[in-house]
Length: 203
Image 1: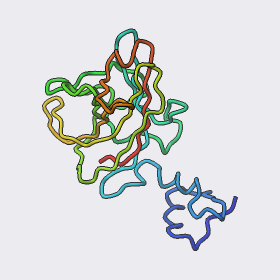
Image 2: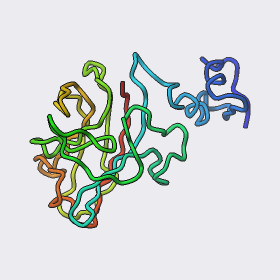
Image 3: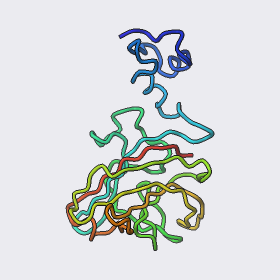
Image 4: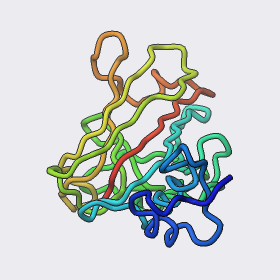
């Protein structure tokens, strides 16, 4: 390992963010260590939008849908400091029963399925600016063996617990037909799970 070259752009900023001991191979101007430094919570933000990587797991536990939102996909923990979740209220890596959120029903554990839009999972986040939307998601695995879903992110104004504002949400569609893939116990049978990887900027 070699110290960062002084000629590389923003090396002073990177070293201040990472602290002492930041090193990278000389052929990589921004090696993994430098990238991780910029990804530390609160360090990488653009116009008030904060970079986040997290995972959503939805599971059917004996007929009850439950979910958890966590940072490190493999360990299902907050083990990697740059994966910590700071922009989703009450995100938890312990399963909670998934609510069907509505004008009179609040979020639980960082999110919920939108009433009347059963293929949509809405995250409990601050007001978003749809003009700054930059958020992506993918299905990492699905054990339901019914019809595989795809997901994409949106920022739409929804009324949750009396507050109408744009939030971050995931829309599920059938991978083959693009029809709505409802988040229910038919598509996620008992004992099965769908896992989603999310990455993007959140206000």
